[in-house]
Structure formats: C-alpha cells, structure tokens
Amino acid sequence: MKKMVLLAYAVAAFSLSIASLASESQRKIAFRRGGNVWVANLDGTAAKKIVVGSWPNISPDGTRIAFNTEGDAKNRPGPERHIAIADIASGKVTVLKDIPSDNCFGPVWSSDGSQIAFYIMSENDWHIGVVKSDGSGFRFLKKAEPKGNSFWSMCWAPDDRSFFCQDLTHLYRFALDGSLIKQWDIGKLTGGCSMSSGDRLDASPDGRHIIFDVDLNEESTRKNWDGPPPGIFLLDLESGSATRVGKHDFVWEPFWLSNDEFLCIMQKENENEPSIYRMSLNGKNPKPLVKHARTPSASAP
Image 1: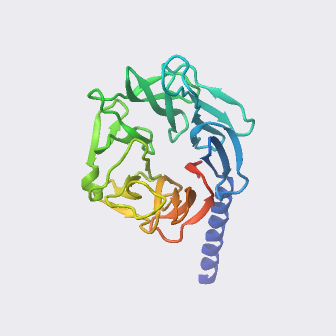
Image 2: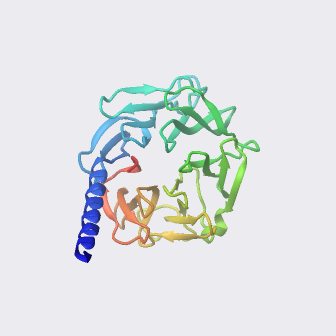
Image 3: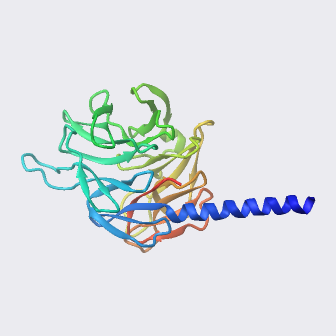
C-alpha cells in the first residue's frame, strides 16, 4: 500500500511538471528592438518583428500587443503618439481613435485583458488614462494633482481593483476612483535611490510584492555609462520593507513571470546595449533570452 501511495505521488508530480512545461511553451514575450515591436516564445526563440512602434505590452492571453506609434506632430512641436493594438497572428494594427490626445504612450493591459491604461498629455500635463480593450470608454484613471505632479510607472494589482504608480518621491497604491490606499517613501525604502518617469513597477501574481527599478545611490565606474547605475528592488507589501535583487550587474525594467521569477534587461561590463534576461528573486544565474532588446513583457501562465 505504501509503495502505491508513493507511486501515486510520483505520477502526480510528473503530471504537474509536464503541465508546467506545456504552459511555458505556450507563453509569449513582447519587446522593443530598435524602433520596432517584436514577439518571441518565452525562451526567446522564434523572434518575429510585428510592427513599428514603442512601449510594447503583450496581452495576458498572448494574442495581442498594445503599443504606441511614434511620429512627429504636424501642428505643434514634439512627438505625435497614439495607442494601438497589433494582432499577433494576423499582423493587423488598430489605432485607438477615441482617446482625446495625440500624445499618449506606455500602454499596460489589466490582468483580465479588458482594459488598457497609458500616459496621456492633456491640458499641458501628463495623466494616467484608461480605455476598454476595444478602445471605447476613455476616462482619466489618475490626473496630475496638484498641477504638475504627474504619476508614472503604472501597473495594475492582480485583481484589477487597484493600481500602483510613483511620482518620483513616493510609491502609491490607489483605488480605481483615485483614492489613496497606501504610500511609501522611495528614498527611505531604497537607501537614498531615486526613480524617474521611465522606471517600471510590476505587481507579483499573488499580490504580495511589487518589483521596481531605480537609479542607485552610487556612482558608476563604467566607461560606457553616464549617470548612476540602475538596480531592482522588491517591496514586501505586508511588511513594507524593500530589498535589492540582482546586485551583480546593471539590471532594470523588471516584469514578473511568476511569484519567483521575472524578466528584466541587463547590460554587462563592456556592452553597449542591454539584453533581456530571465532572473530568479535570489538574483543568481540569470538566463539570457533576447539580445539587444528592451521593455519586455510576458503573457500570463
């Protein structure tokens, strides 16, 4: 009887392992290389260029990529950028036309794939806007307040009932009506590190942590690097404490794969461009996936 029980456990564990491998083989990643949006398998194979654009974010089901177009504005100085969706299978691109601005960027899918948040220039200020995945129902999710105090690095909580962001001084968790749930001082969390508008936040699938990149509070000695080096921190939402992840190299732009692993970009000594890696929370043995690429995101398991 004991042998039969052990055999049953072994069969169950083997089945779970096979299911996990099958799930991984179906997942996709999206990224930017040069001025183009690309898609690949989770292991970096079968990379394919999809469309010209920036800030790609793959949908949870792995069938579409939200991104922003890039161009020069015709009637004013600066860029003209629109939120668009590319269907991976067909290559069809749909520009979302019911957004009241010609300067939007950085789309982020909600966890259930029903909404897309992004940054929108309106009334001479940057705000966070949101639309349904078909481009309808635009509204402001979080406006700059007071005027000139914009919020960046937006990511959805796993249940899509709240979201995280930062204003260069604090990390925040807001309800969907814009009311404050929680805030953390970035400098105190990270020992004096700082954040910029281009940094990334991402919430773990189990909702217990957020991961984010910063400019470290130290000087770089690299010949091919200007400014402070980048680093990644993990914030435990229950305890409110943060720890640095992956201390051995320049790493940034994290995106969760599971509760234990994430995608990021890394630039090693004597390299001129970053590449996409898969990394565990212990920071050991990062696995290279895609050379010379940025802004990685992954479909859901």
